[in-house]
Length: 125
Image 1 (spheres, rainbow, N blue to C red):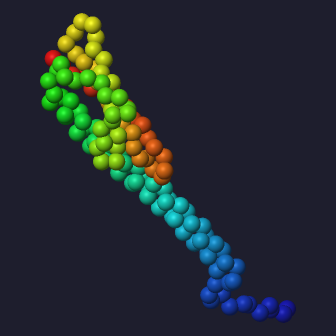
Image 2 (tube, one colour; image 1 turned 30 degrees about the vertical axis):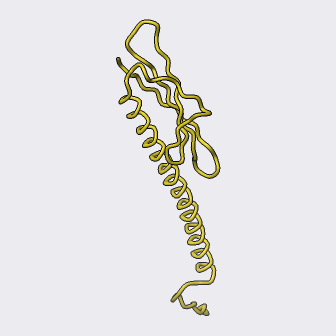
Image 3 (cartoon, rainbow, N blue to C red; image 1 turned 180 degrees about the vertical axis):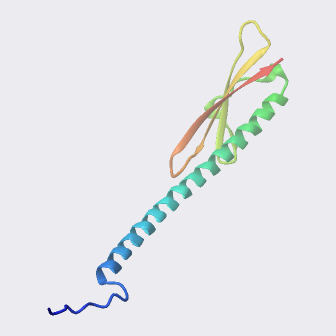
Protein backbone atom coordinates (compact mmCIF):
# COMPACT_ATOMS: atom_id res chain seq x y z
CA UNK A 1 0.00 0.00 0.00
CA UNK A 2 1.27 3.34 -0.96
CA UNK A 3 1.35 5.93 1.76
CA UNK A 4 0.24 9.49 0.97
CA UNK A 5 2.74 12.16 1.65
CA UNK A 6 1.79 14.28 4.68
CA UNK A 7 1.80 18.02 4.38
CA UNK A 8 3.74 20.00 6.94
CA UNK A 9 1.52 21.48 9.66
CA UNK A 10 3.84 24.22 10.79
CA UNK A 11 2.50 27.81 10.45
CA UNK A 12 -0.88 29.09 9.31
CA UNK A 13 -2.68 28.66 6.04
CA UNK A 14 -3.70 31.67 3.97
CA UNK A 15 -7.38 31.08 4.79
CA UNK A 16 -6.66 31.17 8.53
CA UNK A 17 -4.76 34.44 8.17
CA UNK A 18 -7.59 36.04 6.17
CA UNK A 19 -10.22 34.96 8.71
CA UNK A 20 -8.12 36.25 11.63
CA UNK A 21 -7.62 39.59 9.85
CA UNK A 22 -11.37 39.85 9.17
CA UNK A 23 -12.23 39.18 12.83
CA UNK A 24 -9.64 41.73 13.99
CA UNK A 25 -11.00 44.34 11.53
CA UNK A 26 -14.58 43.86 12.75
CA UNK A 27 -13.41 44.22 16.37
CA UNK A 28 -11.50 47.42 15.63
CA UNK A 29 -14.48 48.92 13.78
CA UNK A 30 -16.77 48.09 16.71
CA UNK A 31 -14.31 49.72 19.12
CA UNK A 32 -14.15 52.87 16.98
CA UNK A 33 -17.96 53.09 16.93
CA UNK A 34 -18.08 52.70 20.70
CA UNK A 35 -15.54 55.47 21.18
CA UNK A 36 -17.74 57.83 19.14
CA UNK A 37 -20.70 56.97 21.35
CA UNK A 38 -18.66 57.58 24.52
CA UNK A 39 -17.49 60.94 23.18
CA UNK A 40 -21.12 61.95 22.61
CA UNK A 41 -22.10 60.91 26.15
CA UNK A 42 -19.23 62.85 27.73
CA UNK A 43 -20.12 65.94 25.71
CA UNK A 44 -23.80 65.72 26.70
CA UNK A 45 -22.94 65.32 30.39
CA UNK A 46 -20.73 68.42 30.16
CA UNK A 47 -23.65 70.47 28.85
CA UNK A 48 -25.95 69.07 31.54
CA UNK A 49 -23.45 70.02 34.24
CA UNK A 50 -23.09 73.57 32.89
CA UNK A 51 -26.89 73.93 32.67
CA UNK A 52 -27.35 72.68 36.23
CA UNK A 53 -24.77 75.15 37.54
CA UNK A 54 -26.43 78.06 35.68
CA UNK A 55 -29.89 77.15 37.04
CA UNK A 56 -28.42 76.73 40.53
CA UNK A 57 -26.91 80.22 40.34
CA UNK A 58 -30.28 81.75 39.42
CA UNK A 59 -32.04 79.69 42.09
CA UNK A 60 -29.70 80.98 44.79
CA UNK A 61 -30.26 84.58 43.65
CA UNK A 62 -34.05 84.12 43.75
CA UNK A 63 -33.91 82.59 47.23
CA UNK A 64 -31.77 85.53 48.43
CA UNK A 65 -34.28 88.10 47.15
CA UNK A 66 -37.02 89.42 49.44
CA UNK A 67 -40.17 87.33 49.00
CA UNK A 68 -42.33 90.21 47.69
CA UNK A 69 -39.79 91.19 45.00
CA UNK A 70 -39.73 87.79 43.30
CA UNK A 71 -41.73 88.18 40.08
CA UNK A 72 -41.84 86.45 36.71
CA UNK A 73 -39.29 87.19 34.01
CA UNK A 74 -40.27 86.90 30.34
CA UNK A 75 -38.17 84.99 27.79
CA UNK A 76 -37.51 88.27 25.99
CA UNK A 77 -35.67 89.59 29.07
CA UNK A 78 -34.00 86.31 30.04
CA UNK A 79 -30.80 86.34 32.06
CA UNK A 80 -27.69 85.13 30.30
CA UNK A 81 -25.63 82.77 32.47
CA UNK A 82 -22.72 81.37 30.53
CA UNK A 83 -24.11 79.92 27.31
CA UNK A 84 -27.63 79.60 28.73
CA UNK A 85 -30.63 81.92 28.72
CA UNK A 86 -32.75 81.60 31.86
CA UNK A 87 -36.20 83.01 32.65
CA UNK A 88 -38.90 82.05 35.15
CA UNK A 89 -42.63 82.09 35.85
CA UNK A 90 -43.87 82.74 39.38
CA UNK A 91 -47.26 81.53 40.57
CA UNK A 92 -48.60 82.27 44.01
CA UNK A 93 -51.62 80.49 45.42
CA UNK A 94 -54.41 82.88 46.58
CA UNK A 95 -53.94 81.72 50.17
CA UNK A 96 -50.58 80.58 51.35
CA UNK A 97 -47.03 81.46 52.03
CA UNK A 98 -45.40 79.72 49.08
CA UNK A 99 -44.45 80.96 45.63
CA UNK A 100 -43.92 78.29 42.99
CA UNK A 101 -41.16 79.30 40.59
CA UNK A 102 -40.77 77.48 37.29
CA UNK A 103 -37.23 78.14 36.00
CA UNK A 104 -36.75 77.59 32.26
CA UNK A 105 -33.30 77.34 30.71
CA UNK A 106 -32.43 77.37 27.05
CA UNK A 107 -29.02 76.62 25.65
CA UNK A 108 -26.78 74.28 23.73
CA UNK A 109 -27.18 70.55 23.69
CA UNK A 110 -25.12 68.06 21.74
CA UNK A 111 -24.41 69.22 18.20
CA UNK A 112 -26.29 72.26 16.95
CA UNK A 113 -29.47 71.43 18.82
CA UNK A 114 -30.89 73.86 21.40
CA UNK A 115 -32.29 72.27 24.55
CA UNK A 116 -34.98 73.76 26.78
CA UNK A 117 -35.18 72.43 30.34
CA UNK A 118 -37.49 73.26 33.26
CA UNK A 119 -36.89 73.19 37.01
CA UNK A 120 -39.48 73.98 39.70
CA UNK A 121 -38.66 75.40 43.14
CA UNK A 122 -40.79 76.62 46.04
CA UNK A 123 -40.05 79.87 47.83
CA UNK A 124 -41.38 80.21 51.38
CA UNK A 125 -42.34 83.52 52.97
